[in-house]
Length: 250
Image (cartoon, rainbow, N blue to C red; front, side, top):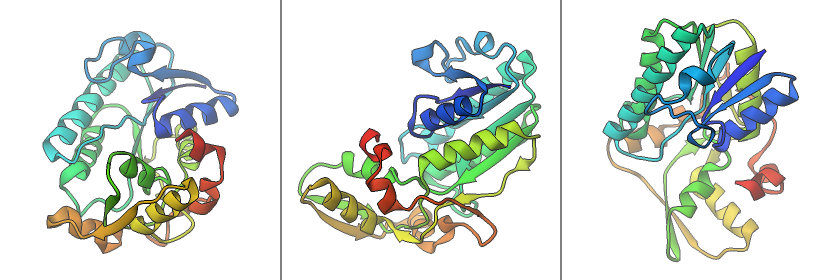
């Protein structure tokens, strides 16, 4: 099977590429560095020739609802147009568990992405996953100084490696519109993860958990992002991930 991975050099994308190759699939990486740009559309048509399924693991870093929506709608529109022209039979979109009631900030963009996929003509599956183990480190890396402020977030983080493997399994099957959600094995609090990562890395910073205002902050603190009882559950805990090569690569 020939699978294209959009965002194939990113946190989840690179694990998706590895998982697809390990499963014996022929893999096409869609990334600007590989000559395919989901925002401009350049290079997509050529890259998608003879592709059976595409996994969209693209991402943008913003808390602006407008910017996130523009990015995900543009990327999805360009991907779907190129897929329809090339005869791609399955579009798999990575999204986030529990965001239905949080149509604001970054999550507004992900919900817009889902709506664009549903409105398209390419058969699809939306695969939602919980936040990744890498999330705490990404936030820490974006802050300077001795104090790190973490939003109050009740979560059930999952390893990006397991998300990539899950996406390949979904893409290998028939379009199903929605796959079962994927979450991690343990309930966690984001500020606790940040403290444990700093301790493991030998860094000394004070971590403070803060409740963000508005619907976004309320949603993060609500526990909805932990997913439901029917979700698939990953096996790698956050502490196991800390001691793995994946942490060193993140």
